Image (cartoon, rainbow, N blue to C red; front, side, top):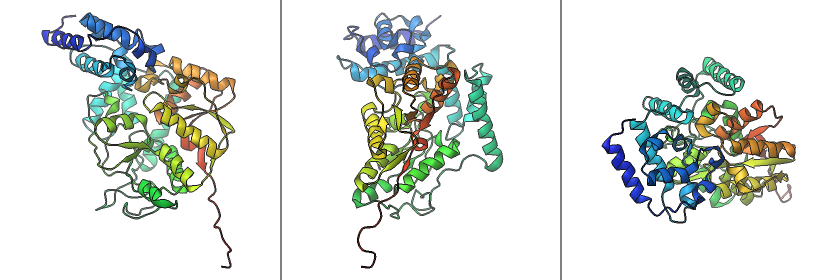
Length: 407
């Protein structure tokens, strides 16, 4: 491959910035995609140090990176390994010619976000098929596509929660965002209820999951108020398109990719599920669960310990067992956008085997992870149920009023 002098200079600069790397392998050990990569981040940095330009531009590992940042956090020399991979993706996008699912998905997402605010699954899938990338789980993809088309024919795309004129947000009950709608107690409940809700791309396209999310939040006393005019966070494009959304307020989210992208853009986020569990604890509320035990899965982009703690807290409130093993089992990568086109990952195979051995469903904090795990379970013919968190947990009954009714 003929490589321009500009690309060689860029690789040389990356090599100089990463000279302190002594190839300890901590980055690859920390990578939630480690078992699915050819060599992992350690090998990519080695190629950078050797300035092997052709090999770098041909490496699928740079696109199978989900940009979670675990490699940078683990580096004992404090090198920005994730940043180096992001720069390599930009170089490959401009000067390479790879054909891998993750790379094509990012290209399709970039083009879609140049014309619309959010990724729309039907047109996204059609564009991927047109490029020669057919979902591995054809039956599951066909079912999802048919459901989305029926939804469009009946009532058009799933409506966003809406925005109230002059307030920037509107509640699911139609009231303005300035009204206190909490049934919880204390100032913390009011403050949480007034946080804008960033709904993202995926949830509005799953009406049932959206309705369940709204129901759990409302039943716990925190009706959702959507941030007005909130576009896609940009993560599907892998850095080519930045989010057009910023907020001075703390924003509630339902997607770990949105968390990562918004935080990078300077907007502080709190996962909705974490906020709801905390609110239930403060209000003395219980939860109910769909099964007596479950296996948690938080994916690669969430803050693993926090997400697992929130699910464990929910289990305690619902009086069910949260079955955990070694941390990476519950925080491996499902394959991100490439998963549905490449197939299940080593992480999802191990997790589903773990759940099958315990006859327990899987509960995840990420809608995309749910879909990829369901696809993996279908392909492997495992009778494992995979739930997005509001499909598994619901609000328990509120405590009855105290005191004498005749007072």
